[in-house]
Length: 274
Length: 256
View 1 (cartoon, chains in turn blue, red):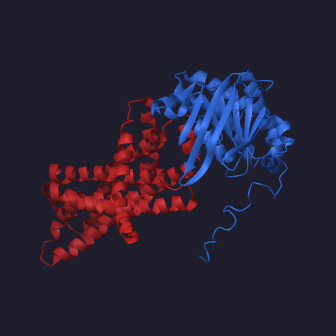
View 2 (tube, one colour):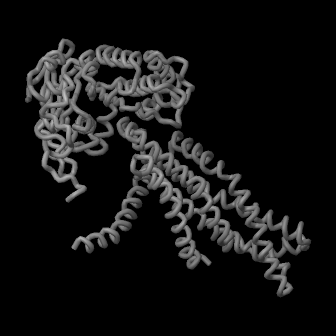
View 3 (tube, helix red, strand yellow):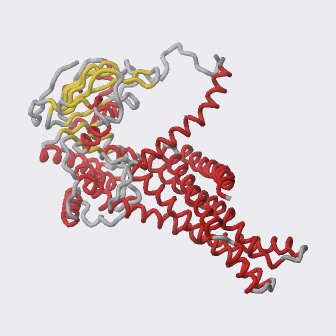
């Protein structure tokens, strides 16, 4: 499974390396023997059915979770071995867009975007203002700086969260279901922003999604996760034509296939009668 | 065997929870820095949770003062000692009722809102977003609210006691016609600054710390669901009320 990839935009250098990763929750194995190489400058998508462990991979990369065995390396540094202080420093170089945006509800749009700038830099106030306003303009929301998050639509809130995530120009962007629940125009906007920011700033982006159509439009490379393992990997077009049963089932949305419908294996007790 | 382990879990559960709460307190306190941003944040929270509790505290204080005078005059009249009412009201207010009732009201008014706010921030991934921005949510969210609570409760207690004395004045002098000079002189001579007033201030500081710690801890450790936040809010009121009364007894034993 450890096949490196090179997209048209990536420069071939591996920025994230995951080796023999095993992660368990209680007795349930979420990820089992995962190997991943993500190249600098690319947009990589993790796809798979809901609850399969896609977000868990993001959390392992950001250091929120630690693997039971195996290693996660970012820029040559082992995330799983970092102290809390190293982790804080490491995260300053990562931008994260969570599924619902997670804007701070007690702060205005301006203060939301300014929070990481004030926290991690000593920029004077006029510069903070210019930086925030330029990011806000880049996501097309100039003029909303004094609004509170509850006054924004879902798509606008996601764009503000995007501006906040990229305000310090991080090297790596992590997106957790960035387009879920958005209308088609907002989806296109976020997709364009992701691509443009990634290419302009020379970022590496990792996107978790279960939307096959959307992923085919922006990702350079895909990993499909099923049954705790990587069921398939490659450029989206290649995966769409894959004959591997799990990949074929997921990409074409079939009910029948190796990815089970039932949570428990067939024959397991129902719990009501035993 | 299963029953034994359940009993053990019930016994050790609260102890380990208390340990986690104490570690949480240490984690918060380790983040105290004399930085302008932090001071501003504490002042903002003092306004939001302290100043906004002022009206309810003042109304309650006024009526507690009136009812205290009413009961005291009824009881003291039987011994012809109704002119001692201000002494009784003053002592009981500064030593007990002021700190305890203010802290209980604060737990209901501000403690619940702190827990619900932090719990909702957790449920909507705002705390996770902070962590991912390399901002410690304990120091950014919990610490200012905790410090604001510690600052607010003694100040609110002072307002409560002042309004209770006013209520007592209105009832005892205005309604019952007691002599104002005797009322004030008994209060001045019988209530001691060091013993009665400062003792009450110590209590209110401790109560402020207890309510605020319980509120921020339960908010931070709430399950990130609607039901989880609801349970955490209820637990804040119940536990902080019990702890206030327990610590009131302990502190009274040592202070007075």
